[in-house]
Amino acid sequence: MFFIEVIIFILLLAPMSLVLHELGHALTASLYDAKDVQVIIGNGKRHVSFKLWKIKLKFHSFLFVNYQTKSSRQIPFTAKEKVHIAASGPFINGFLALILSLIYYFVQTEIMLQLMITFNLWLAIVNCIPFKIGQKQSDGYTIYKLIKK
Image (cartoon, rainbow, N blue to C red; front, side, top):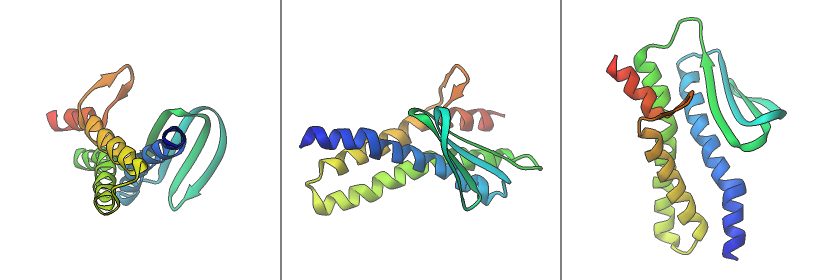
């Protein structure tokens, strides 16, 4: 049973946490009146694309490789707005970990909840650490660069 739960976590729940992270960025950009907001999930051929509120979601073949949010508007975002947009992804994961922890406090038996709490807490923390690998940079690195200016 544990093996099945881990597979469900890896194939379904972990990607959902990553999508929620990206939706955090997208919703914040939308609140700052971004006109073109896209959440891109995966690499390769695009299979599904739809619009949710002002946000275009695009799902590609290889779902486990690439998660990103793109947004733009005519008047460029201010540094403060960019910090809010960058911080909103990790904030969503931290908030989700907190809510799931409260649920776990009362249920205490679900391994799936433990995995989700740990993974979302990990996402929140790791994305706040400033680092850059190639062209990819963490939300923490984005925030660090903006504050450093």
